[in-house]
Amino acid sequence: MNFGTSSLDFSILPYVEGVNPPVTKPNPAFLTEVGEQGIRDLLDRFYMALHVGPIKDIFPESKEEMKIAAQFSADFFIQICAGPKYFNQNRGAPQMRGRHAPFRITPNARLHWLVTFEEALAPIIEGKVTSDENMQSFWNYLNVFSQWMVNSKD
Image (cartoon, rainbow, N blue to C red; front, side):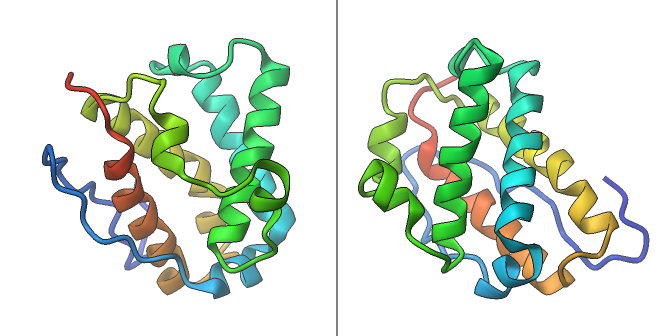
C-alpha cells in the first residue's frame, strides 16, 4: 500500500522453516491512541475480509461465527498491547501456537493473512489515528507473530 510520505515499512519478513524469531510486543501507546473500540473495529474489518478471502477455509464459515472470532482476536490484541486481560478472562492463557495447531497454516496463508491485515489497518493509517512509530511496532509484531503460526508446508 502507498501511504504517501509515511515512513512505514510493511515489508513481510521471509518465512524460514524451523526458525522462530523473538517476538516484541507492540508499543502500549498503539492501544492508547487507537483505543479498545478502534482495535475491535480493526479486527472486525480484518475478519470480514478474511471471510471472503483466499484463506477463508481455515476460518469459521458463518459471518456470525467470524464476528465472534474477531472479538476474541480483539481481546487478544488489546491484551498484547498492554490493555486489560480480556483474552485470559474469556478464553484462558493465549497459547496461540496450540490454538492454531488444528488449522493448516502454510507460508502462503501467512502472506494472505498479513496482506489482509495491512488492508484492515489502512483506515487507522490514513486517519493518522496513531503515530508511524506505534503503527510500525504493531506491524512488526504481526510480521513475527505470523511466522510462529505457520505449521504446514505449502
